[in-house]
Structures are given as C-alpha cells and as structure tokens.
Length: 211
Image (tube, rainbow, N blue to C red):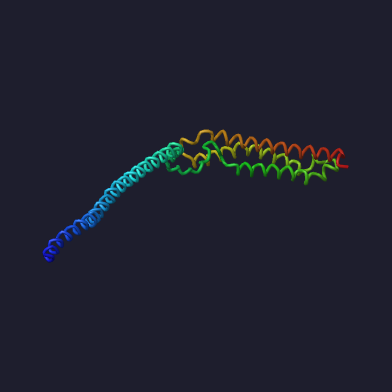
C-alpha cells in the first residue's frame, strides 16, 4: 500500500512541479522574443523618422543654397558687353597737297639775291668811302644783276609750274600756277629789299656814316 501511495503521490508531485516550473520558464522564453520584436518595432520608426528628417534637412539646405545663389546673381552687376573687334583701317600716307610746289627752286633764287646784295656791299664799299661808288664799273654790274634777277622771278615761276604740272594727275593740277607765282613773288620781294638795303648802305658809306 505504501508503494502504491508513493506511486500515486509521485505523479502528482511531478505534475505539481511541472506546473510550478512551467509558469516560471515559459514566460521568460516568451518575453525575450516579444522584447526583441518591440525593440525592432521601436527602432524601425525611429530610423524612418531620422531618414525623413535628414531628407527634409537636405531639401531645405538645397533650397537655401539656390536662393542664396539667386540673390548673389541678382546683386552682381551684369558684365558690360565686350566691344566688337573691328579691323582698324591702316592709315594711308598723306599725299602732298595738289596745289603745292617745291620750295627748293625759290630758295636758290632767294640765295642769289642775298649773294648779289652782299657782293655789292663788299665790292663797292671802298669806292663808296672815296665818294665815287656811282661811277665805279662794279656799280653797273650790281644794277644789271638786280634787273636780271627781277626778270628771272616770273620765268622761274613758269618753269617750276610746268615741271610740277607734269608730275601730278590732271585732277590735281588746280592751284599749281598760283602757288608757283606767289612763291616767286615772295622770293623776289625779299631779294629786292636786300638789294636796296645794300645800295643804301653804300650811300651811308659815301657820306661818312661808317666813321
């Protein structure tokens, strides 16, 4: 009987022990997956929210940078348009005036007048001091030389005009004759004045002004 009782009691005790152990072990085994699942569920929304916040922050930063660049572009002055490069024309050498003739012949002509005036004073000075310059043969040469040079003026003007006329085109010959005669007249006028000054200087020597 005692063995039967023990056999009867043992299953009950074992059942009680199992019943006691199950409530302790099963909740622990079930709580760990639930906690992990809860943590995963909690982490997933946090990660999604963080990603959304980062995306919104990136969009706002991009918009702000675009607005700043637009403000800078509006504030910056527009560059002045570069001038169109045009080929500058090569300056041509200025042609000689069509109504101009050379001064060289008239300069030589005026030099002849200066030579005549100086020679008259140097040659006739002694005769003028002695009081007989008017009757000296050199005085006649001085007078004839002055007359020849006066007549040479218009002839020189005609020669210079003809030479200049041959060197220029037909459309550029206007004023050549006038220019030639004006220069000859100017040289003749200056030469005659110098010659007359030389003759008057001889008269001063004659009256003794040199002393």
